[in-house]
Amino acid sequence: GAYRIAVPQGWTVSMPQDTNAAVVTPAGQRQPSVMILPMLPVSDLRYTTLLTSCVGQGYSPFGHVIAQCVTPAIQAQLADSRRAWSPDATLQLLLQTMSQGGAAYGTPSLVPISPTASRFQVSATANSQPLVMTGAIQMLYLQNPLLGPAPGQVGVSSFAFLSACYVPPQQVEQMLPICASMLRSFAPSPAWLNALVQQVMNRYQQEFNILLQMGQSAVANIGLRGILISQWVARMQAMQVQAYQNVQAASYQISQNWIAALGNNANVQDPNTGHMYTVPDGYRTYCLSQAGAVLGSNGELVPGMGPVNDPCQTILKAW
Image (tube, rainbow, N blue to C red):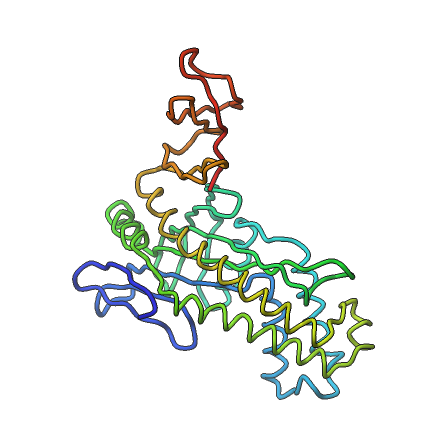
C-alpha cells in the first residue's frame, strides 16, 4: 500500500481524487477528521496556479501567449525560489490558498519545533461549521539548478508536509490525543515516497520542455539561466536522489513531531553522534552533560555550565 496509519475502529481512510492526501474520518461523517497533505509545492504554487489558469482558458503554452501566460508564471516561480520558505510563512500561504475553497481561517498560533517545522492551531469554519485545526507543518528543500537566478547559483524548491486534525471546538480536549496517536503512527511505503518524488521530477521536466520551446533568447529575457540538455539530464538525476532522501526524512519526521507533541515534548539531536533525545518542551537551549544527562535552560547553555559534578558538554540542536 501507499502508507500505514493506525485508526480507531469505525474510522475510514480515503484519498481524494487527483491528490496524494490522506483523510481519516469516522465512517459516514466529515468531522472530526485527520489529514495528511504531502509534498505541497510551496515555491511552485504561484507558477502552477498561473499556468493552470492559462491552460484552463484554452491557451497553449507553446503558442503566442508566452508573454501573457508562461513568462509571468516563471517569473513568479523564480521569485518564490530565491529563498527557503519557513514553516510559518508556508502555513500563512497554505491557509490563504485553502480559504479559496470556501473555508475561513483565523490567525494561527504557532510553536516552533525546529528550523524546518512548527506546530500550530487555528480556528476555522467549513460548511458553516466551526472547527479547530491543530497540526504540524514540516518543510523539506530541494536545490534546483533549473531555477538558478545566475550562473553558478541554484534555486531552492520548498515543499511542505502538512498533518492536521479538524475538530469541533467542544471536542478538542477529547480528540487531540486520538488525532496525535493516528498521526504518530503514519508510516509511508518507499514506493509511495518514490511516486511523490517522480511527480515532482515530471513537473520540472515539463517545465524544462517548455523552456526549450521558448528558446534561449526568450529564457534570457526573463532572467532565467538556460541549462543545456546534457547538463539537465545529469542534474535531474542528482535532484531525484536528493529529493528522495529529503522526502524520506521529512515523512519520518511527521511521526516524530507528533510523538513529541502528544507528550508536550521536543526532539533534540547530538550533532556529533546523530543520537536523538525526546525532552520536555519549553526550554530555550538543551545540553548533554558529561554523564549523558540532558540539561535544559531558558538561557544560553555553553559547555562547562551546569552542575559542578556533571557540567554541560555538548549543545544539542533542534531536530
